[in-house]
Length: 398
Length: 221
Image (cartoon, rainbow over the protein chains, first blue to last red):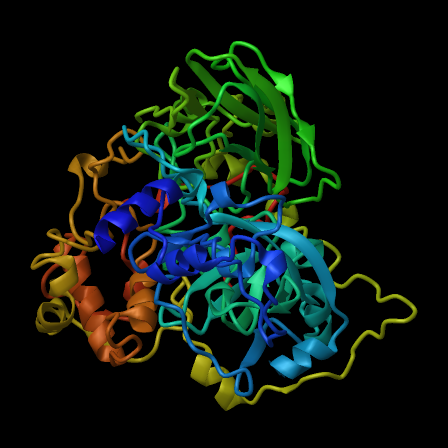
């Protein structure tokens, strides 16, 4: 009996079976809440027992954000995607320190308390794993979470990296720096110093609280608009240099073979992308007015426009963008559509403030080759509405 | 597509620029078109602090040489950072068998994790069109020094950072031997490792999308 009940609820939830507790609590909600005294105050808030959004782990090293369950643009911290290369380390904030050395006048060590004493800044930015594409096969029963769960948006708080570079007296001849984590991978990436003077942060806050362990507690590098892997988490060391270090993560990984027989290296920028999150698998639509909505984002600045098509790309209409549109952050778009029945393919296309247009699969393949689908794959994505109202991913096999 | 317009501006060799994605200028072309003297125009290194913001806050403390030495484990493509010591393929083979083969296969080709060994005929670079072509050290890695740096810091996953420098040298030598990059009797150390010629070295092209970045560096530090 327990099994069948779970299976039933899992079908409704689409991705993850509701726990037994939630089902029991749900069934215990009073039929008239106004006739029962409510619960007392408590130290830590919790979601309504009916709401069970879940990250979806893929193996032990990543899990994606359930975009189909979210509204607006901010990702709840416990639903922010995770990707790590040596597990999530446990770091005691009292013993944490950040070493900055190399081409500097004064090699220095900063504790977490030190970092928090510097002038701080809060900014809303997306973070996206450059491997954020789950739609290369022939499967059609894929959720937004499975297609693009490895992007999330938070308000990040921290100290500008430029402030710390002034503090240590970074040499004007330093053009690159190594960022190194304290995880078991001791993950390293080489970053141009120019990014520090643009908008890089050492972040310790996420959505108003301390950064979650999966996002780099107690402090991480944040490079707005650049591929997730370069935003080194659990940051313990920065070394300034005048050339990159050619680490494993920036040579054998996180490079893109191109159709012309080269491979692109130091491909930090996350190009514009959009994704309809409703209606999407596993929703079943009813005829009538539908508010198509989704998220769009670009590492190049602000989203200028999102076009929506309800006829498989034959015609496009600009969607409404939720203001304020923030730079390098998820932007919610909405488009009203009257579905009168019959088969339809809906899709969205982002245009950013530089004029960059989100590419089709064919354009990507022309530049990158058919097998180059590991990193920086941001194709226009379609959903197929069947006459019975079921919605599935319009697969485009690579 | 509008992005193509941007690409034309970048594509000094008149490369064909596809719409949404953007091609990059080959490394060789960049080297020719970017004068070495102006290759590294780092932005003004330190924005002039505002009147209310001091040049320095006096927060933090000086790092001791011992602290720096303990954490400064990176190895550069020029070999800077390589420790004393040495190893041969024969030194590395038994370590590989006991610590690495379980995940990377008996000869580095069997998996289940990353395939480490194997060259492609003519050292071809078919990775954009052939999803089955394995990105091994011999077929895809542009620098041999990366193997030392990565193995020492992160391998094996059940005991990362536990290998002694000579063990890492031995493992690197064995892997280079498996990739037919050095002979069986070669010795790998701080001098010889950066000199190992990697077939894929010239394949890598700096990304030119977005803001200009410093060239990966003709200079060594």
